[in-house]
Image 1 (tube, rainbow, N blue to C red):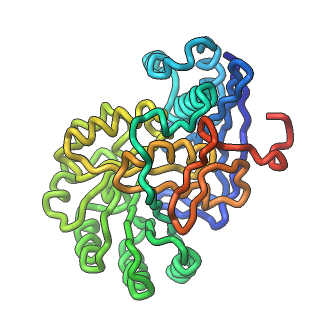
Image 2: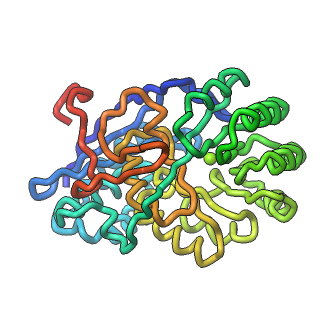
Length: 347
Ligand SMILES: [Mg+2]
């Protein structure tokens, strides 16, 4: 099967500040597979933090797609296992292929992808809305702008004093559910100081308080912490899960880290068996990849699928987010439709 790929620069509505970085644009790669007259669409959001490059991702998608036979699309687990076993393909490139294959399966059967997994999506699939790190004033403005979203995810971890100041100010403004993501930006002592205050302010849980790899310290923090601790940067694929069962309360699974729906569902089963709570996250992505994630959202306790809401030039129509509630399209496959006016060629 031949894959067409296309780079696309997503423009962020606000500069997006995290503990490690600030960005105003993110470049993603769209992939398109043709099979029996149908089109399967996928998206990779490559991450330099996880060692990915745009060129590497494009090369992987084109090389791996060439080995897929049209008659084999229903055997997506076999395809993804072979792709991963070669050891050449990274998370987001795998995810782009995996979601394009699911799109083809759904379109071939003429059903939405979520109907393949044996669970009816909940009526309420509420996503959090992310507030990036900025000055306190700008962060408060963003909280104001997020008026219709019932759950906020506040980014922290660059400056512990500002983190405490900003969360106190936000709590004065709103009694919404608040989650916090430190992106590994705190030391052990800073984490204890912040989490004590976050607990008093009724924050729901804290994501990745300590740097990745600090598993022993994280286990210690978990046993002390009044709030549930979720890990994100320490969680990639199902291989990471068993060692995390005693280290945290929950894991943040993302299609771009794990390599797509196939692996994400394996992680769901394993995490549940080990008693871990589940969060489905995303990168800055268009509605294509967010809609792919939404197909399996019902298997998760907490959703953070707002990457498409942070950009101004989303080239796809897919999942609709209404006051934070995700509404899956009822179209076959992933159910995403390109907005032709935003593509300058016949991708
Ligand atoms: Mg995170």
